[in-house]
Length: 134
Length: 248
Image (cartoon, rainbow over all chains, first blue to last red; front, side, top):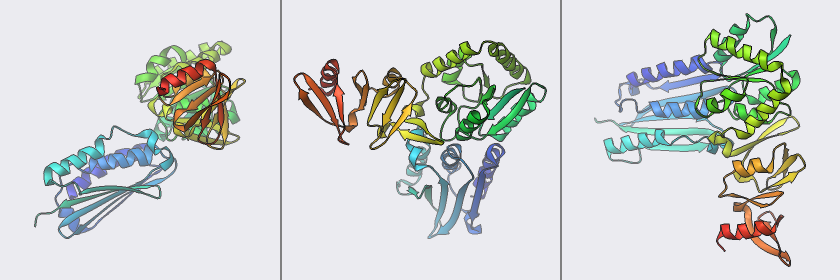
């Protein structure tokens, strides 16, 4: 997790150079989550989505949140970004990002319930659970 | 002094234009805008001689922003986005700068503007034509932007009930409102998805998803009834084609 987080920070630094004046990033990871394992680069497309919908298609300051915690030998990761419900449908991508994440999780763990997304009050929330072997 | 407005959602992209422009003493930057909304306001306020315009911006893109203006200013597009635009624009807009662009490339764009500036009416005609002909960006097929007083609204095309010709304008009707726009019926007939939108009459295009009934009005004369209770005239050939389309 620690290494993945470092990668993401590097990517977010690049976006900050472009849009730093209105991009805030709020990373909140509990120390014990940093030692957890997760498939490499799994978070990258999710964070790119958060940037695409939360930043490219909005006006004004925004905050992208990334929260991690450990519970019942699962690593929980929650990524939030604002989005505009009204025009959201007009800017659909290819649908590859989330699909590929779902597919990887299925192939690795044979489970379809590890990735959950929801929309709540103009926030798009992506939640991941990664099983940690004891 | 020539007035310049720079519209781009990335401050760094604006700063490169500002830097390059410093060598030109006959240009004055009157406004810098973060998005199309600010752009519309600034252009109406300042009536610039030249606009540097990005295409991909939040909410409304550069083309949509130009549609909202009553008079189109001279535009140099500056974008990282190639595909459709390059083809259409090399011939028509003042110029098209593909980011990242060099100072030399920028210089030649300014030269082109100076040439075109001597022949303004011809240029204006060009860009209006260009807006009609340019292949639409995918998102533009799903929404229409309109300006009412000082507000800009984005209407998903699914929310349109019908479109009516109105002199040089058209009226875009939603469930219980309408918006004026300076466009032609032919433009919308071509731009909108023909499996959903249908021209019933010389002056009307309807959204077939909002159609509930076709009613006889008198002999050989029919109207289309929409879900909001509106009755839309069907021309004789429109009636025949509509029946064909619906397979009845």
